[in-house]
Image (cartoon, rainbow, N blue to C red):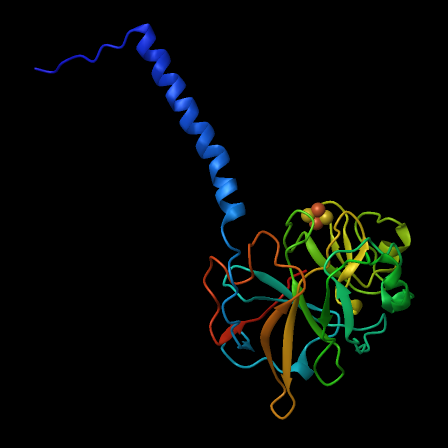
Length: 260
Ligand code: FES
């Protein structure tokens, strides 16, 4: 025979109080545990050959200028944009190496390719800012770059974050409007952040205060092949470290041409 469990009013209140305490401790305890536990360490970055959907190596000299290509790296679910950067006439543009701050005030000036000045960058860098080395472009014209396709503001992802070539306008105005009107930017239409792909994806227009992480590429001159080999800059948005808690890509990653 099944005995009925009878709880009087006092017993009920005790149970409610106990579960409340447990819930509160768990609610506060997890963030405290996360804060006190040592930061997770990056594991070794994969060295991945960029290939097409048939498994054939992507040839750097065959990448269309100002066209967006997409690939995942260093994890199977972290998307990136690959671009052979060019000017308004479709001529490849050499992308210079640059020292970039992890955090910065927006430059509020156009992309470098349409009149922005690299010299002004120092004025927007806090004295205590940590800097990293953006390696510049690779390939025959040193014009090929790759950046995380996850916005550093609140994490909107391609196609919300996309490349707008020089001479084309962003769908929404930027601050100031000239940034979006002249193009040559990586633009996030969620809240209007604009980044300069010609200067390591530094911030041109708020609200983001961090550049997009750079995917470091290597170009093998004799084969014309491209490899993804590292990530530099801020940690990819939403992750505790670039390689933590996910499945790393293998020694080949598939590159797809964007439909936009
Ligand atoms: S998520 Fe990109 S601007 Fe807000």
